[in-house]
Image 1: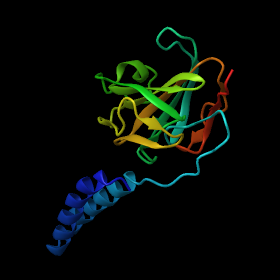
Image 2 (image 1 turned 90 degrees about the vertical axis):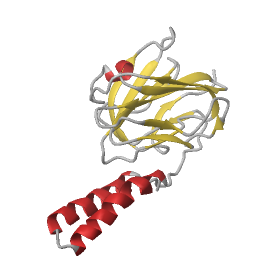
Image 3 (image 1 turned 135 degrees about the vertical axis):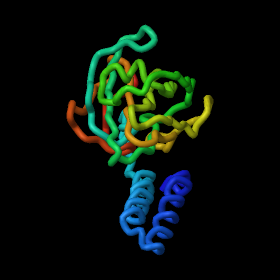
Image 4 (image 1 turned 90 degrees about the horizontal axis):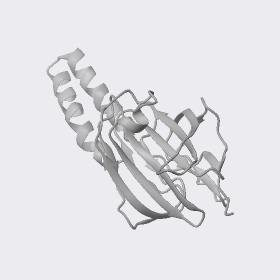
Length: 205
């Protein structure tokens, strides 16, 4: 579990137990349930990371909602968008091995993360990673419920494929941008698991 979860979970659990002692059963039950859900939300399971060369793994748990051709910084490529519901694990992982070239925080709106405009208009962290194959990027995007994107890494850090890099709190979206030579290996509507599901194959040219 992500340790930050304790500071959100302990207060409602303690208040809920106190309410139960005072025989405020309905209020107590609701508060204990909220605290238990927060603990569940901040879970951080281990994952089996694929070791095959050229594999790009999903940076998040969720459902693939878009696969489109899209330019990034004027370069053609593919964008894969993943929607995270409140029931999904919200710890984010590095899709590839490489060095973090830049982390750019962009303030913005909090549109529903399922909407296509969330990719451009919502608050987000844009993380660029330099690899032997070239540069790729992924975005941690806040949503209507999720209003905090957190990155635990810094510019210049090296990351391993599937390494934990941050999280988004309470429902959100993650976009992955890859150059045109990468072969997308997922379909729209598919559920993926962060760090273990293969999004694409991107071998050196």
